[in-house]
Image (cartoon, rainbow, N blue to C red; front, side, top):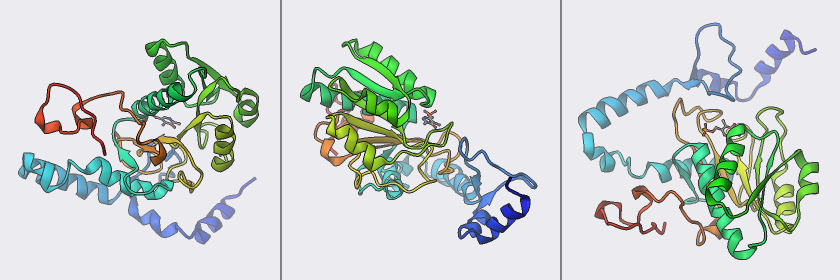
Length: 274
Ligand SMILES: *Cc1c(COP(=O)(O)O)cnc(C)c1O
C-alpha cells in the first residue's frame, strides 16, 4: 500500500513541483482527471480575455493578419511538434482527433492501395478508445472497397495478425484504460517489415511521456490537446505526417482552408502544396 507520507515525500522530491503554481484548481481539490480534461493554466484567463476583448472585440477582421489567426494551425503545430519529436512544418493543429484520424486513415489507405492493392485489412485494438474503431468502421463503409477491420489484443495480437493482408495499423501509444505504453520504435519496425503503415493515436501520451515520431520512423500521428496539454474545452487536435509521405498525402475533406488560394474563391478545389 502507498501511504500518504510517501506521496507527500514524492511531491517534495518532484523536480517539476514548481509548475503546480502555473495551474488553477479549486481549494482542496486533488485533481486526477488530467487524462480527460487538463486543469486550467492560470495564464489562460488573461489570454482568453485578451483574445476576446482586443483581437475579436477591437481588431475584428484585422486579427486574421495582425494576430496571425491565419497561421495558427502551423504556428501551434510547430510548437507542439517539439513534444512529439517532429521537425518544423510537419504538424498542424486543427479539427478533432476523430476527424484527424479520418484524414490520416484515408491518406494511409490511399497510399497502400497504390502500392499494395491486395492489402485490405485495417488493424486496431479491442481496447482502442471507441471513437477510433467507430471512424475505421465508418470509413470502411463509406469507401465500400472490400476493406475489413480486425481488432487485436496488444502486441501478441499484432504478431499473430500481421500478414500480407494488413494495409494499416492504428494503435494508441498509451492505452486510455490500461495505461499500457507501446515501444514505438520496435512496433514501427515490426509493422514496416510487414509492409504495412502505422497511425499512432497520442491522446494519452502527448504531454505525459517523451516520444520521437521521426526518430522511430512513424508514418502518421494524431492526438488531442485538452488532456495532458491543458488546452481547455474545445481546443483543437493535431495531426502529424512523416515527410516521406507528404508528396502522396491527400486531404479527403477538401474544404477551402486546404485550398492553394482560399481567397481566390475559385470554383474548383486545388490542394495547397504546403
Ligand atoms: C480522448 C481520446 C480521443 C478523443 O477524440 P475527440 O475527437 O477529441 O473527442 C481519441 N482517441 C483517444 C485515444 C483518446 O484518448
